[in-house]
Length: 196
Image: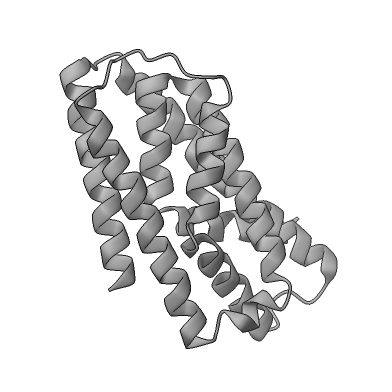
């Protein structure tokens, strides 16, 4: 059980390095409500679990290759620029209560997290360093540690969704538009800073 708690603690610390997923969940829960933010949270948790699983394989060694790192960062830049400019483009046409298909939050979460190669670099680097230091010696400890890290993602983004839902009560169309512009700009800057 201590491995789960250690994984959860590390996961929470890593969640504090706020990035595009945090802003995506916050924005979605403000503009569409708690349940859309929660659906996105579940998608992010699923992708994190997938990438943590991949970090147990050869992928950790491959990501040490400098050329592959540059390629991944380039794709991250393109993805974040795309999402950022999409927010800015749609901001002028934004209505406060848009109706969206039920799967929007989940699908959006999958897209934003899967397309962002920094997620796999992030988790493979974390678990790669644990392997290198022989900190996780048994399979059970490894699985519990990974579950703790994934649960940290869920817990952090769950409360982000609640916070966004609370902020929704104070929103009007103008504020939501400014939020769209802000999130779009943050995603673009994050992509540029990550690449360069």
